[in-house]
Length: 296
Image (cartoon, rainbow, N blue to C red; front, side, top):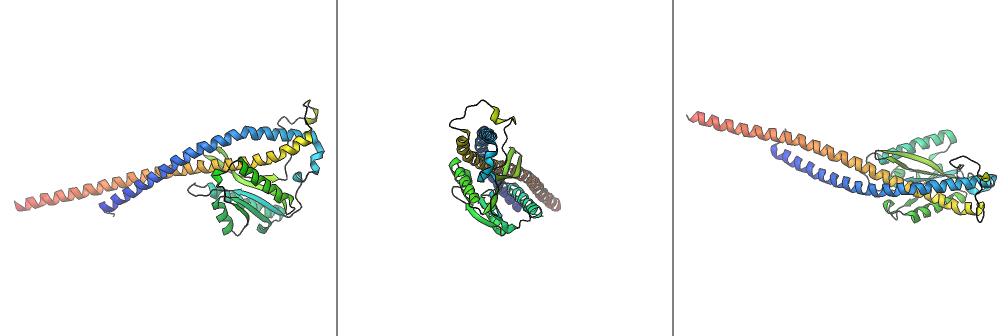
C-alpha cells in the first residue's frame, strides 16, 4: 500500500494535471466559438452560390457537358485532399477520420480495382501527414504554411485552384475532399465528397431554370464561368472551417472528460490519504495509551 507521503505527491500531481486539462478546455471552448461562428456565417453564402450555380447550370442545359470540370479526368489516379489536425489531445477526431479513410480505400479497391498506389494526397495537418507516411501512402503535398487554424478564404482559394490545376493536368480522373463535417457540439461526421468533376447541380425547387423571367447580364455562360471557381473555393473553405470546428469541439469534450476524471481520481486518493493518516494517528494514540498503562 502507498504511504501517506506517496499519496500526497500523487494528489498533487493529479491536481496539476487537472489544472492543465481545465486550461486546455477553456482555450478550446474559446476557439470553438470563434470557428463555429465563422462556419455558421459562411453557410448562407455557400447555399446561395450553390443554388445560383445550379440555376445557371439548368439554364445552360447540355452545354456544360462539354466542359472539362464536369467530366471525369483523363488520368487513372485519384487525388484526395485530407484535412486533419496539427495537434493531438482531441479524442477520436483523427482516428475516426483515418478509419473512414481505410474503409473508403478498401471500397475503392473492391468497386473500381484501385490500389493504394493509385491515390495521391494533399494534406492539411501534421497528424494526417504522419499517418499517411506510416502507411506508405503517397503525399503529393503537405500544406504547412499557414497553419490550419490561421487559414483564410484566400488560402482556401489557392488550395482550390491547385486542385483544379492538378485535375486539368490529365493525371487524375477525379478529386475527393475528406474532412470532418460539424453537426453539433458532440457530433462531427467524417465525410468524403467528390470535388471534381463537378457533380450534377440542381436548384432547390427543382424547376426549369430556362423558363424563368430573370434577366442575366451579360449572359448565363459568362456568369457561370465567373461563379464556378467561387463555388469550388467556398466548398474548400467550408470543409476547412468545419474541420477546425469539429477539432476544437472534440478537444473541448476530451479535455472536459479528462478534467472530470482527474477530479474523480483526486477524490479517491484523498479518501485513501485521509484513511491512512487517520490509521496512523489512531495507532500512535494506542501506542501512547499502551505505554501509559504499562507504567502504572
